[in-house]
Every structure is written in structure tokens, then in C-alpha cells.
Length: 255
Length: 330
Image (tube, rainbow over all chains, first blue to last red; front, side):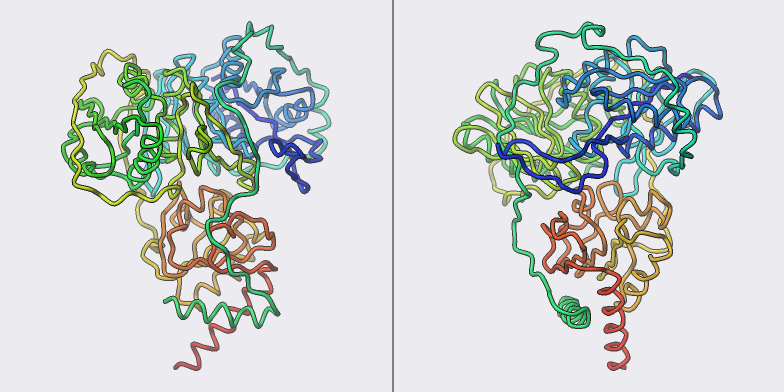
């Protein structure tokens, strides 16, 4: 089974997130990009499926040359091939068009993504690309069984402890829920070796995308602000003992 | 009519999810200001009960799409049915609940309607003639304010708890039934069965005091610090999603969008930053106490009482105080 795993490159540990002077964008020193954690679970599931079924895993990421690091990480984890789409647009419509176009150039039975990216929190690109390509899809998948007849059975979360078992004909796209497999550690030596492997890249022109397919339009970002608080939280201060006594009083008067 | 506001009704076993009434409140606000109609769209099998329960909740019209094939339809089929019915209505906005079902359907509906989708939204309101949508980004630490101008239409997926349902009125909405030939929609997936997770050893939704632990705890061994507090307070131990993902606590302890929704008398959040998926599952608790070392953690946006500090100092002190109080009262 050939699997494509979408590994979004997102800013790694950011300790200095600030709202920029224009009030519409964010500033941080995040030179290092890391794999989006939700997508890392998709990669782990792909590795488990490959172990059982054989086939190849292709890791794909979108972004500037900086996102190559994320692909090397995926290769170190066990992906066989890596593809970068040279597109730095975070708009879900543009990104899903680029992903759909890139998928058309790849051989696959299954596409795995995470549920959302930690930076944009949009959670759209996977299913939007599947819808453009006419692939069946399922979101928040917690279990995957490969059947003998060219289908897979996916268990997806419905919330509140409910699940649906869905049968999907291949090729299909699954948004993998976090926690489906434990995250594995990659020894540094493998990460260094992975950097010797080739990464192919597509420009947006290579993918045949142009004009308004590449423009985020139909909305304007007017501001980025700290969350508005609907009520004022009462902050307790003092020694741990004082705080503990105050908290216990509050708890006892509430029960 | 062109320009109307369309709300997708979410229902399970004939029962309407509370998110729908919140969407109708948001939709009513928009429809009043934009002077258009608010339409509720329900798809499924046997919708009589759903239609009756919707009445009086603010919409001008109810559109029902009924078919036995929609009882257990896969996401791709539901999205196509909704788009097929919505397209000729030319709605300005389609409001969807950002539930797990909504997260699956929203991108597909947007593609089929050729609209932008704004997901994970916590507010939508009219401001100086533009519709302003607020959505948390970057681990929910900041909110982006997005303006939609006169000609912009969009699918807007709203988080639960963003709006308060309006008081039901006697106003009866017109009901229109639309038939869709579901069998003619190409489907490459189907739902085989729906199952319910067997209840574990504890039902966190029934507890009066819930003490919840997040990834901020650091290591598995330290969960016992929080478990001791839960025990001393006579409450139950719960957690946020990352704690379950790494296998430190079982799934039935998880609070949040994909776990359980709890509304205890007291909710104590220890080392939980407050991702929106978590807040969805606990924000209606009567008294929320948050202990976190980051003063900017989103959890303080919903907490009533907050402590900015080291939970390994605060929690053991609170456990000790609770134990002493219990011993005294005996």
C-alpha cells in the first residue's frame, strides 16, 4: 500500500510570540520549523500500516526551503520519499488546490493527514483536497483496518464517546486523530543520515496552478489580538498555603 | 433566497445538539442586521421530531431533506446533499457547528459550493457594515479578526459555547421539504455502524467535583499529585486530550470536544493551557478554578478563579488543607 502523509511545517517552540506593529500579523523568532504534531501521528500510523502491508510512504510538505527540515525528519522516521511543494500560502483554499494538484502527480492508495495545524487551526486542507479529487474521506480517525478487497475500514470519533465505522474504497484520505499510535523517538544518527536523501520539489507552476487559484480572496484579516475575555478571572495571590486555604473555601462554598 | 443565512442542523437519534440553537442565535443576529431570512437545513431520516423541536428558535424557514439513505450517510454524501440543496438558495453564509461532524463536513461543503470556509470560529458579528469573524489561531493564544465584505460569502464553522441560544418564541417557521436522489450521488464510502464506547470504571460526567490534569504535569508519575487532590476533595480525576494521547490516563477520563462534556459544581484545571477543544467540554461548569504557570494561558479566559503559579506547590498544599478539613469535620 502506497501512502502519502501530509506533514505541515509549523513554527517549532515559540517563546516570543508578539502581535506585529500593524496589528494584523504575528511576529516571532521561529527560525526552526517542526512537523505539526497532529501530522506526526498520521506519519506514525503510516509507518504501522507500511510494516503490515508493505509499500512506500511519501511525505509531503508545503512551504519554503526551510520546511525541508520537516521532510528530513519524516525520512528519518521511515518515510521512503519526500516531496516539497514550494508554496508559502496559508489560505486553506490555495493550500488545498496545491495539495490536490501535487497528489495528482503521485502514486498512492491512501493519503493521511492530521486533524489540524497548530498555527492556523483550520483543519481544512486534507478534506478540501479530497473533495476536489473526488476521494472519500473520514475525519478524526482512531483506527484503520486494511481489507482484502481494496477497501479500508476506519473508525472515526463522533465525540462524547461515540464512534462510526466507515468503509472507504481506495484511494481515500483519512485525517488521523492524535494518540492513534505512540510517537516514536528518532535517534540523532538517523536524522543526520536522512539529510543525505533526496527531496523532490514542485513549484506552483510545475503543478499548473496560476492566477486566482493562488490568491487568498473573499476575506480580509483586520486584526490579530489577544483573546477577549468575557469575564474577569479572580486571581489569587500569596503563599502556597494562603492560596490553598482560599481555594478550599471557594470549593466548599460551591458544592 | 439569495443572500440568506443558512444554519445546518446537527442531530443524533432525533435529538438536536445544543450547538444548533447557538448557531440559530448567531444566524438571527446576522439575518436581522443584514435584513435577510434565516433558514435551518436538516438532513436525515425521519425528521418530524427534529422539525418540531426547531420551531420557535429564531429561523424564518425550515428546510427538510429526508431519505432513509441519509440515516447513516458518509461524510462525502452528506456534503454533496447539503451543497445540492444549498446551491440554488445562494446563501450568503452557511453556519455549521465546529463539532467533529462539522469539522468533517465544512471543508467539503465549501469546496462544492465554491466558498471560503472559516473554521474554529468563536464569534461572528456586524461591525461598521462588515461581518467580523473571530477565530483562535496559534494554539489558541491569539485571535484573528477576519472581515467579510458585502460580496463575500462563506461557510462559517462556530465553536460550541460561542453564542447563547435565544429564548424560544411562538413564531412558527414555514416548513419546506426538498427531495434529493441520494442514490444518484456517487459514493465511495459508507458508514457501517455507530458504536458507543463502553463506560469505564468512572463516569466523569456525573461527578460534582472534577479535578483535571493537562500536559503541564510533565511526567506520568506526577499524575498521582493531582489524583490525590481529586481524592481529598471527594471528586474524580479527569484530563485533557494530550494526557490520553500519551497513554497516561484512559480515554473515558478525557474532557473536551472529542471526549466528554462535563458541567460539575467545581472544575479544577491543573496544568491545562485551555485549547479550545478542551474548553468546549468544560466551560459550562459552575465554578472553574485554573492553576497554570502561564498567565496568558487561554484557560484563564474561562476560569472564575485563577492561580498563576507552580502547580507542584499549590496542589499539594490544597490537598493537605482538604485532608485536614475533612479530618476536622469527622
